[in-house]
Length: 242
Figure 1: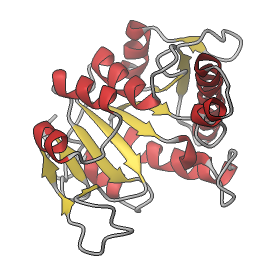
Figure 2: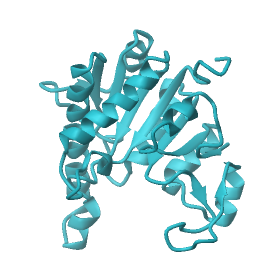
Figure 3: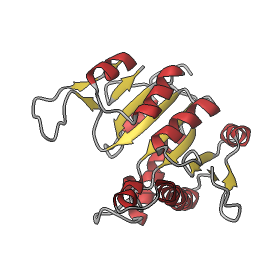
Figure 4: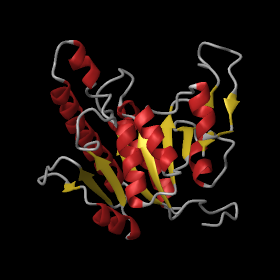
């Protein structure tokens, strides 16, 4: 899509959100106010005509690593996390529907009473009809993160970019909270990320994006206009890896 300064630079995106994005001040659970804030931001880019698929984690409800550290079988712990992503997906669906954005929740783990099964062509059809598709359940398999699920779904549905929404405004040379001399990058290549070991996402997800040439944009989701500007193609608001 051509960017004239007012329209979106991308026709179809995957927006990756952490589960913590839904947590309130206490740091866990689902905060309805946070859900509404996220919904408003998604509504803004949806109104630009951007076909938007959301992939959300479950760190606000459960972390598999916590269970594993206490001796839980990892497959069990990971499946619990996948179910948590469905809960988060339903919360986002409710928030979006209440402000007039038509949505569908699809999940890799069949829960036909509350969500559709994830079917690639059906997801694409929903996007083409102007619906926001919330993709939950991870990949449906243990041992894979929701970052990997986002990369996989981005490839499957033909997204032009994966936007990773975080609490920092891009990728830095060091942790900016610890190092005042940390430098933020406007743009990086996949090779630069690998060589310098910059943290963008887990390695399986990153390698998938690299192999299939899916650009990754890291933005501060909570900055007022950064998501909007990123969708417009403004690469100065975060870090783009391509």
